[in-house]
Image (cartoon, rainbow, N blue to C red; front, side, top):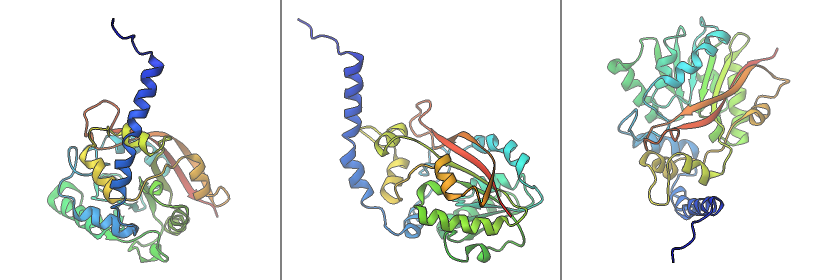
Length: 277
């Protein structure tokens, strides 16, 4: 006699339970990440050899499609005559794209190795002459003053705030306020995945059998990410200090490691803000 077919509900429960079999491995991998945030990021970037789709960088889709989705918002709200600071620039993909819109683009990253990658790609001709980079921790006291930019500036920040704790978010926002001054505007885009870490890595292609190499590298070496949406934005950029000009949902594109449709796109949130006063 054949066994009865499993109900859809039973299959769903089994699928969920199988995902959580990954938890011990995720815990084991994440234990190797340096506890010091700047050290973790610099160590990560020191080990990077390739860029773009199929490379080791989880959040690099290898195209400018995501940036092109932001372009109209940037043109609508940000003063193109001001320089733009790309905070958390990594290897500079978005910095170089921003240089096509603004008078000057300055990429800033806590990792000196990231800045070296960014500068090398720009010098190799994959960027514009009006791009430059600086290694700097934008959560540090006096970081805004240490940045070699004269006058007010726009700020572009993608995928940074969701990996910072509340104290570092507040410290960074203080520096962003100083950078923006009276004329500058802040554009942010952050992942806002609402599931737990197991659900998040499953969305990015992890299974009980394997974890995509770029994802495993990030788990091994980097701080555990959170999410950043309207509630987090309201706490980090309090309404009494910041005017919200626009916000909404976006898709954050990552490295298409699995080839499965949708797994390389993470639910995200964008906001455009300007300091009050």
